[in-house]
Image (tube, rainbow over all chains, first blue to last red; front, side, top):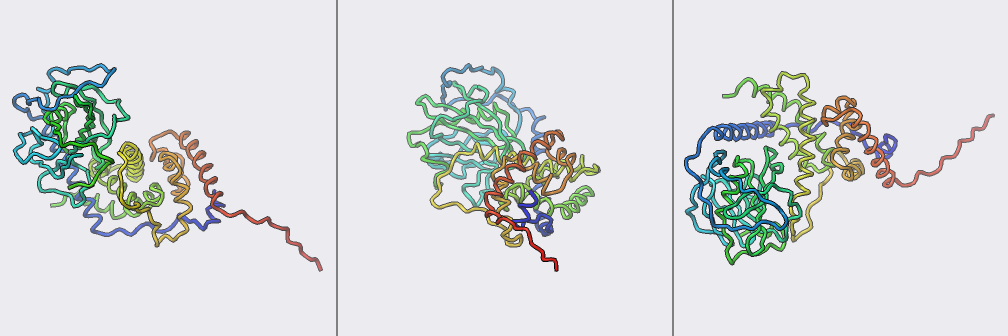
Length: 223
Length: 178
């Protein structure tokens, strides 16, 4: 290959990219934040959450042809990550919420999707979803239904894990089908430190309203 | 107040960040924004692991392994990400003017390689690592490195040949003996 590379004048032994001190400081700040999130998750693992989280609201049905376990008792053991608290703000369009993560609030909502982020940390780019909790309508049945069946309120969903876009830990992807056949996905970032059941507990408090619409594409223009 | 391990990490980043960006740029097939994302991810993960790896003799190899995993994670997450509708044609990665336009053919050819094969080729042949060091960076066997680089080089050669105009036939130079 060297002959062809030489023909194109390609050399690979150039000097490395200059490093600015501001970049180094930013790298260390990111590392500190990641370490802080990890410590918070580890500390949360040892904290018992009193009571059982209420379940209700978003009724889902099992996808045809799959068997679902009820995972009885798992909800009571959901003790990891940021806890859910009752939602007290103005309900968004397209969805209503029963609970949100403590210290988090709605950042963006429209009839297509809902974004919940830590209060006061709104990213200037509305399409930047890193570290945020999302509820979206799926335009069609998700192609990947390889998730693990999990109880969501009175129904069931499919949950699976994927590398978090932040590069730290894993996101949870929970696919649900409403009684009317609409598919909804809840994407929980690693920053929440939630177990699968905690994601299901949040999803159980989500209700679809008649204003909800399937997105023509994703992400649509936010409001 | 900064700790001694953090000061050591700062020195490491100052020394190695440029090399990581350069390797990441090859891995990202010239996409400098993706390369910067990969390096930031790598250094964040390295920071978390620093108390464990800072005394190791193979910190660079560990960083390269994280970088490779970050690239593979990025490919997978892009494959899962829903398609987006854009009003305008998205921007394309530009070749760094400081590098000169001569890298464009290589980046275009690298972009056609799967992430794992691209990583093998970049570390083995563009970054001059040994087979063992490349295997360490990719967390695979040396045999796997050989097979991946062989496949990758064959594809690169094909791609670069297609971009090169036909080489004119050479004629033997006649020397007059006087």
